[in-house]
Image 1: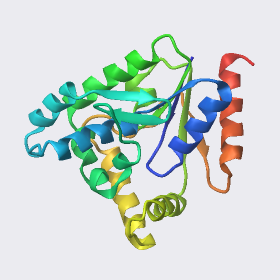
Image 2: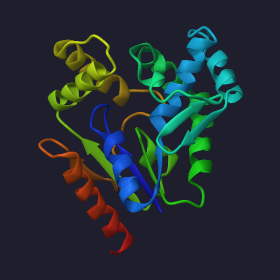
Image 3: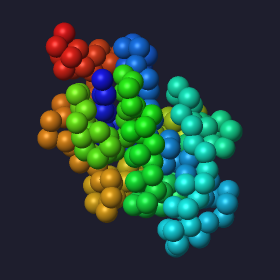
Length: 217
């Protein structure tokens, strides 16, 4: 069974998807980390961001592995590194590159083949797995998402302010909903869940109900 969880940045997708997968005994796939890994590779190989073919070629050359909730690039665990502000600033070059997306979507489908998977990202229920048996669109208010992102940055030791992060969230939303490929769109058959005012456990409880309902109990 494939469970897709899509939604805007900061809605809590990674946290609850990971917890849901663990509770259900499913595999977990963080697709956003895959795009971040490509962006990190681009930084390390000094690609010319104005030449998308360079990044597309590099994406096909590097080895990206998903190991539980870890992301591995060419044998190196880069789970924490790909969350840095430096990588975040250039991840759009990977996310907006049609050839990179085509390559990574193929990898995602290969990963999920024959498995029970909880996969989260921006286009999982619309592009990667349009026939998924269970789809969720996770949302939260802009303020709540900004607070979560601020906490993440503080945990990583990166300087940030609420106003700056709030502005970034709004800008990111506008970009994500108008991207030429992999735009943020709620699938018509996705169940929308707002996480405002809910603990992680409460959100996971709700998602478990949705999944079990989709499975017929």
